[in-house]
Image (cartoon, rainbow, N blue to C red; front, side):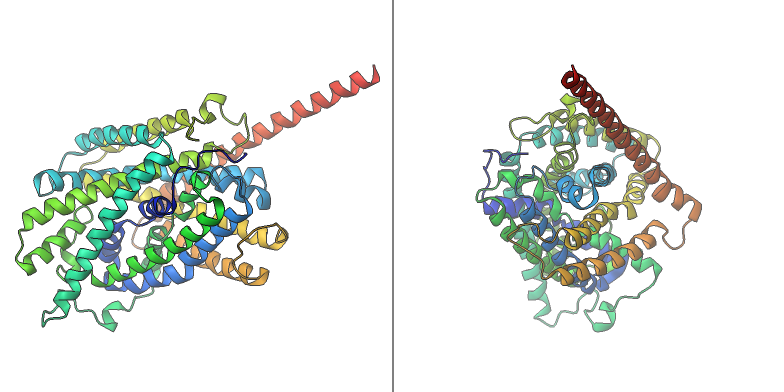
Length: 478
């Protein structure tokens, strides 16, 4: 697709959009609940071993596909072919449907903190209804293009940066006195226990450090083009990785790990800090709730738009209906965005009526996104390996080292991912049959249907080409 004249966002807006898409403060708390302070070195490991090399891979693909509308499909197509490209972009869109269902209850929880100063627990049905309204609004805003999302993301970035800085300064100030943290920061407490359960949880840390490919959906909207995009995306990777590691190290200064909850964890660590400094916990709770509600809702708007753009904007014409893939003036397939809303609407209704509590509702959604969330990055990595192996002569301004170095690095990433994904698909202590059905069978069924769909399309295209060829031959002979 040719480059358009939509260049409407600058470097800071792109950095903000990448930050909003990738950095999620709740990941710090969630992984602390699971792993304790050992999540800090694992985040650092994930940044050095995974996130930075993965950002380099994205930067190289962007540099080699300057005229791409949204990235992923074009990146996979050249090395692996159209079927794999379609399946990779489909899975990227598909796994995010479940992520929306797990995120929306958190947005509601922080909204209650913002309005009431504490978490008000709704029933699963009411939670689903509110989630549907929020997701409809997010879908509407997501169709307005990069300019709108850039402005929203800048607000999100300012708020989260400020919140993070306040907590880090507060935690370091407390540690500079004779205050003993609720969980002492020692080498022993930071040393991870390497077992099957830890390997499975690492999937979530990899996912937390991922998402850089989302920003590529707005490559054609960046002032300065692909060169500025590459610079910003690399800087964003370093910044986000450092913030995750530092935040994970200081998260238990005021509140012990066992007192944190998934829904309100970030508010809980700030109210703990407020207690230490003698500040109103109620006011701090409301302030943090407001910032986190805006941040999470802004992040969700970014994620609402990106998977739709990535899957629907560059697939071959005719795979879906013409209206479904038609782009508006902002380069967004509007009808596809509302189809996505319909799927999430159905999932929220089913999940809401089929769960006894909001926590159970979230657990179901989280289980459905466990190891499957690693499939799109694996597609990208395999495509990168083949790209460096067979298409290394492709002109581009950025490379992740030599051909051998690039192939070696992505091979290491693939090995780590496959092991971690296997542990996440079959976590310790669960029914293996249930885990297989939820995490493997359902994804395999939908992947097979997607493969059959694109195969049917290609077969139909081939027949049409043969008919046209035969008609031309008849015309020549006549």
